[in-house]
Figure 1 (cartoon, helix red, strand yellow):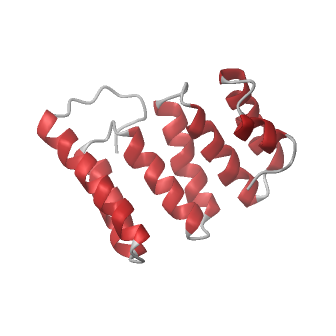
Figure 2 (spheres, rainbow, N blue to C red):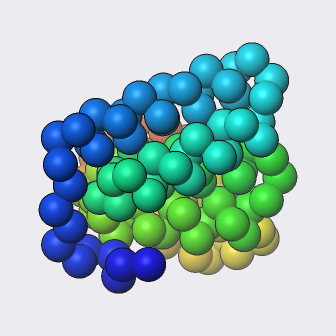
Length: 131
């Protein structure tokens, strides 16, 4: 596996294929075939290791499957890939909260607040109304 942030050359064809795999994974989740979704998301990461969307999709998948530790690993990777993306900080905070690491979750949500102080999702989580 490549270290996070390592320069990766991805062909437009692989990038497009990864996006298609992610879309198929989301469709499989909606249709009730989560194992297929997981495989598709992982394949998308293989095709385009720079795809923060694929990485975040895996985090969401694991969170929904009740595997918050694994969700946190993928969410942390998404944050490292795109540190200015608010929803990745929220994803990380939510995963950490689900593991019981409330201080680490709060730190992630504070990072989100630094990006968008008035975002209602951030305000709600910091007020203790996290979903």
